[in-house]
Amino acid sequence: MTACSESQDYAVPQAVCGTAVKDSLTAPLLPPGEAVDEEYRVREEGSKTCWITVDRRRAMILRKDRHPDEVDPLKLAHGVVHQLANPEAADLGTRAALGDDGVLVTDDCVYEGENQHFTLEVMLDEKKPENAAERRRQLMDFARAYLPEAAAGMGCEK
Image 1 (cartoon, rainbow, N blue to C red):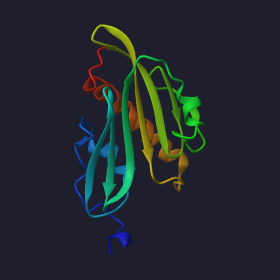
Image 2 (image 1 turned 90 degrees about the vertical axis):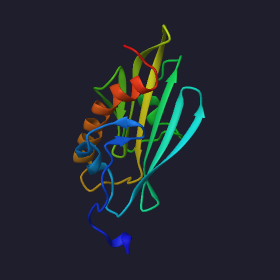
Image 3 (image 1 turned 120 degrees about the horizontal axis):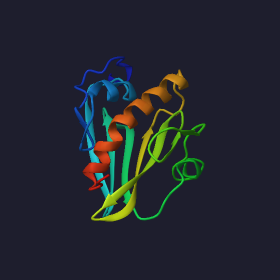
Image 4 (image 1 turned 180 degrees about the horizontal axis):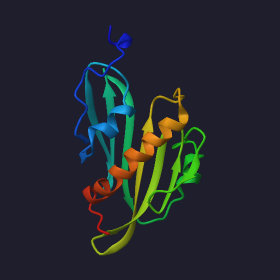
């Protein structure tokens, strides 16, 4: 039974949702299991959502949005749609919110010569990690490495 597996019997991807990132930054965020897959969902122009599943169960959601309006990640983190567990402001991008189960970060973006914003959301399905401080550090390490490549992949220039 895969539910009882305590190891990652799958190869951790070198790219997550179309963005290259070290597997050593991704692995701690994914649960044990036998198989990892990605499922893409495109909401609209400038917006991509990707689900990472392990053994067909959702483990992580990544959203990448390029948009004209500035957003406040901490305000979003307290909302109904993006709700993070125990969100706090974080030092990443222009503004960021970090929770026990995810991170929301927004950064400035120049797209086709116009000033815009890029927002990255990483949400984990594991809502109550055993060590919340360690999970937060892992999320920040992942987001810090992922953000510039993800923004560039959405057409942002700095």
